[in-house]
Length: 180
Length: 108
Image (cartoon, rainbow over all chains, first blue to last red; front, side, top):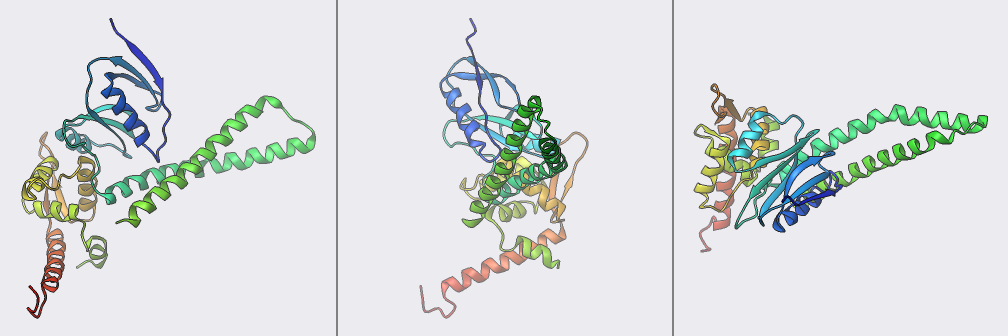
């Protein structure tokens, strides 16, 4: 008899600990990851024995073979991968393992995410501006199609989340560098 | 020597110092982790993500060079530039030690 559990767990680039700690708690309660989908946010767990596992979400522009070899040599197993994000796990008994043990490489890793997030945000600029002009002209011409409303709202929220994420990441890096 | 590299690497982080030091001999990524742990009596365990990131950076800056032979793991070794940077850092460390001991010999 298989006992499954489906969970949608959103998390953001500036706080991967949210998903890392959650998955560790699940493993400690005996829930093993069975399937991952939706940008590492949807999980199917299967009930099994209790385990102590450290999970780490990492970001790489182009994860090359060398990167994976070094992590595997150190006992990490790749759980899933999606658009630059990689989820790794490693069972442990005493000391909780970490992928990054110094601030400098963590700051550099975060910089990569900032760059990617920043450039995709810049790519949105033409869409945002043309959309705004279209809205305004329609408003003053008296046309107001309600069908497009939801799309605009979702789009606006998405862009806001990206801007917020960018600010959060810059702040995380600042605080990492301040206590060097 | 390249002034930009000196500014970038000196003073050196403990991680960079021990990694560069262990690359006096040719080693692969995981070999560096093990060696550093060994020479620091188990005190310093460098994470695999940190190892990979630091190796990529040092290779791009010409402090180390990587060799890949067929299907075997990529190995790395100090370059003359890397050696010079490490020596520069050792001079700095020696000076700190010297000063802290008291140059006049009036302190224990």
